[in-house]
Length: 387
Image 1 (spheres, rainbow, N blue to C red):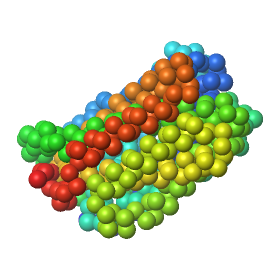
Image 2 (cartoon, rainbow, N blue to C red):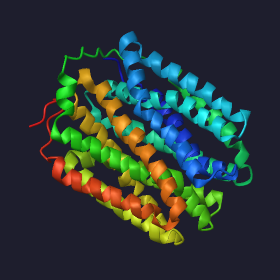
Image 3 (cartoon, helix red, strand yellow):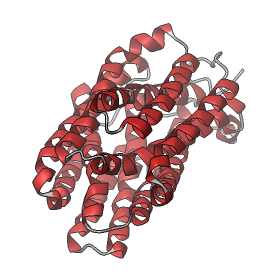
Image 4 (spheres, rainbow, N blue to C red):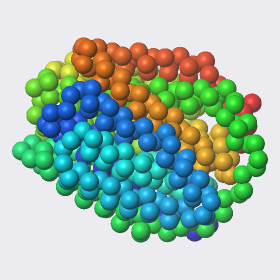
């Protein structure tokens, strides 16, 4: 096994999540500026997230068939950049939907492959994952802060910024070396048996519901803040605040995971996520309480994501981990995110005040499933078989 290329892996995360720092806060505002309705905005963002249902599995199969996992990552990043360039061709709903579907089909396939590659490098030191992943959070913060200032006067430049960052994602993928790790050949039927186990099904259901709630957040938090009178610099600042809290969490996550069970961390994080959505629902106009709500992003995303990566590592043995990563992405960020965007658009159209109450209710259901379905006596590392 070759040494861990910490800086090169970190650089890819930096640019990948830097793009999210542009997309999540400012794409809804850009679309609103182009006079799309809340329902249309929800549908467009659902298209972007919905491609995660199919693309990770299709591109994972391609990587398995060709044996060129890193090459698949590079190809996906390049085509995502080319497809996004279509945003300069016009502002019609049909064109915007085509751009969303095209670029996200390739872009959404990249990260599951890269996460698996990172885990390959860290297979003997999984606790180091958070230290690499935190650079994605740094990229998000820088992008959202720069974007807040840049787009305050020129939201039109959103398109230029997105294209530049996508190009950097592709360039950074070229700098990452392939690991020496040789993935074992999957055994027939093993993956299906793992998926049918109660804790795995519960984990996928929790992941889906959590991202339904986050899909609402990603699509309509900026619009809720704008409606409350916040400017784009302030909106960017509050988005960045959430990710600063996430970075702090990542810095100590290895200690938390050493001293507490995954089940305990998941229960705490989901419960605090319910509190977060309620604070946003009722106290958006209060800067201090909104500060506290955004600080809880450390748990609603940071802790939940780190724990989810470890659950995947424990549930799925090395020969099935790519498939496990893909199915997790499809259920959570794909199905969950798409449903959240569509649901958020429908609720926002009917009554904006209810939007984040629904997000809280959905997350509360996830808390219940975690309590009943995720046994705290989790299997050992990479076993692939539950007690």
